[in-house]
Image (tube, rainbow, N blue to C red):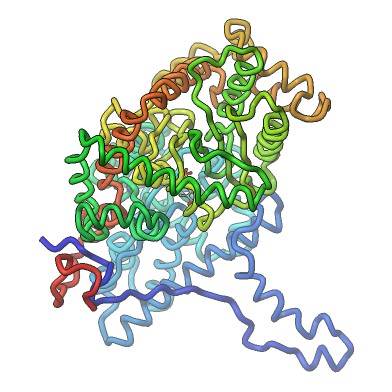
Length: 610
Ligand SMILES: *Cc1c(COP(=O)(O)O)cnc(C)c1O
């Protein structure tokens, strides 16, 4: 079978990017009567629609713009699909045969109402045919279970911007609830739960419900996450439509995340297993042949060291700090969010620091701990975590006792380009989210592919990474989804845990005393009070087991050939996480499309084919 879809083949795809422009750019009438702002107002106003994508949605105006954007982009794309059918003189009834519309999270889920509007109001179809076309064309990928991230639009805002869409949504909902009522007679509770319109508090449109009702398939992005979508988020829908729900585990592209980002690994792979791995990442398995070859493992380690040296140069240039590439690069790069628990890692680093100060660091691996990530502008606690990471870095890096033992780096402006430098140069990948809250993660895959070992919880795709690479090549810790739920039901009182964990207590005390804030005892108070008060992400509950796993990491680092073997096996066994595999699953199981026949011979003769 030829498996080289989408890369160096004789087909190409279109990517459309939409931009709003005023049809009249200058109002001469307004100009002539002296209204200079008014003369360009329409132009400026319309172009603002696509100037900044999704601004902070905390304020009323921001949220209004966001809904306008969602509708604008969705409408442009759907109208373009209809236009394309018309241009080819194909009947609108064939829409689902020519287009598969994948709703990437709820942000474009207004498409359910917009496609109905186009079919009914513009194409004059009847309701039943329009609904059949819509639900055979759309499918929805859920990306989060966090309640605050599931979009809801109040009816006031919705009806003032999109009155026709709201009318259509009410009718979609009325008909849907009618079918539910027939299936569950007299069950008012289920109607409340599955309704597209939420009646708790202010009435609102629940976009995830709209997307689910309007789609033929709904998928989560990792096995555990898809299971939670079925059992926790949408159990009622799963009972109504069991075959609608499935899993497609995410993947990342080996072109960017190995071939481009890690030329030293690319060369080694080309040499040892041929260049075909770029298009068939399962071929990485062939690396397993070398797992007991000491010379090869030594070469693998040298390759890794050279990649780390490259990052060392960047760190020096960006921060002025000199770090030793021979130390373990212990890395957590990702958006800053409490559920991702950068503060759990911060507490662990403080414990490592204290052990060195107290001369209790025997067996502790010398580490360069690297953080990177941005916080949403209005997310106060995430901003405070960034401040803490920088405070710890300042204190640790200025202390001569830490020389050769511990460095802490915070990389500002974390983005994809910086990621290309960081993932290949990492020894340890920190994937420490509260179980059940990280839908998949993709950083975890980029790290493992490039030979980093993971310290992680049973969350998102970590579960499948561990299955693939083998539990002996993965540092597992922390409570499971069920363990967290159990704790929640028992009534979690984090403050009662602190006294039982003396190293944690000392770390928290140091933060409170201003040790990482130049004596300022107020700065981090909200953070410490949050952890010892409610601790909504169970940082303290997982702390002891996290330290235990970190000690196991240090012990493993001491046997370098063994470490290199584990690193090699992580690369060798992560072919499953190629985006080629994910896309193939969407194509076969959801879109029901076959690969375009490839007329050139592919794969074998490698990169030179046209
Ligand atoms: C891959 C990637 C992410 C996603 O990281 P997670 O660890 O999965 O949250 C975020 N930002 C950038 C720049 C990335 O490259």
